[in-house]
Length: 266
Ligand code: HXC
Ligand code: NAP
Image 1 (spheres, rainbow, N blue to C red):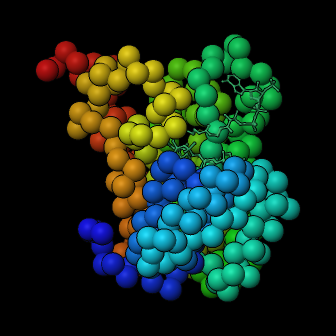
Image 2 (image 1 turned 45 degrees about the vertical axis):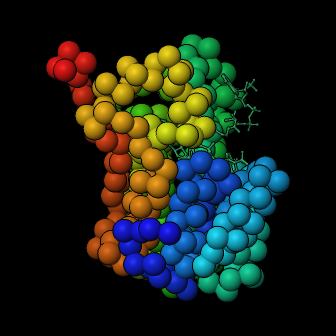
């Protein structure tokens, strides 16, 4: 494994990563395991989750456990946190990455469709953070990392539900950072831009719009899962010991252009 960080960066640390069975958050869980952490990964699809946990454990040097469940249900989330504490004895890092999304015009979106995305992203982030704080982080301190987006910085077509959900996630990041700082808990966010080889890009960016999207990104490329994992490693580590209440945008500058199309500037 080649890494920018010390290979034992997270040796002895225990993390809970929701959405860790796939995509970006599987990449984050893999990076944590590769740097020595023990990681519980959460998702609803049991088979996929168990396969991911087995794959990450086989790579080591840390290990991963599959902890299936739906982050929308608080009692389930309490059981997940307890399950991880039974296995690992401690919990230091939480990554809230579970999310749901699809393209839909607001005028056609059902009330339940809007609520479903809010529930997975925002309520899920609250549930997991709240249960982890009560059972572990509130006593021993720790780091919470909420995976957000840049959809709500301006406004994004067909994304009223997801933009509202991620705005709520960012507000939760700041509020919990304020309230939980005295307990030694840092709460930060990562706002990725489009990341290659992910469900998010597959769902939101039709293949025929890829080239156009690339031309509007200052760095002229989509991100890599590993690049988001590196930001998570930094935020989870002592190198970020003074950082709380911040959302790091990692998008190659994708959210910078406003009004003027970079296409026309060569
Ligand atoms: C309109 C839709 C819809 C669609 C579902 N709904 N899909 N409405 N267009 N494509 C509506 C349903 O009709 C229903 O409302 C309500 O949403 C709930 O649908 P369910 O299927 O019952 O929900 P559930 O089984 O809980 O599944 C949640 C889900 C699903 C979000 C709909 O797609 C999912 O599980 N997604 C997880 C994976 C995922 O989305 N990954 C991408 C994350 S990427 P009614 O009224 O009919 O009952 C991401 C990127 C952000 O977040 C930024 C990128 C740049
Ligand atoms: P992904 O692979 O679909 O990841 C979403 C994960 O959340 C899945 O593993 C899914 O597993 C889990 N999940 C969904 N609903 C859940 C629930 N109710 N309870 C528990 N787990 C649930 O998508 P991704 O593209 O990698 O996105 C990961 C994160 O990055 C998300 O927060 C997303 O909003 C954010 N993001 C992505 C991009 C991008 O370009 N991909 C850009 C900006 C932000 P199950 O289906 O098994 O439950």
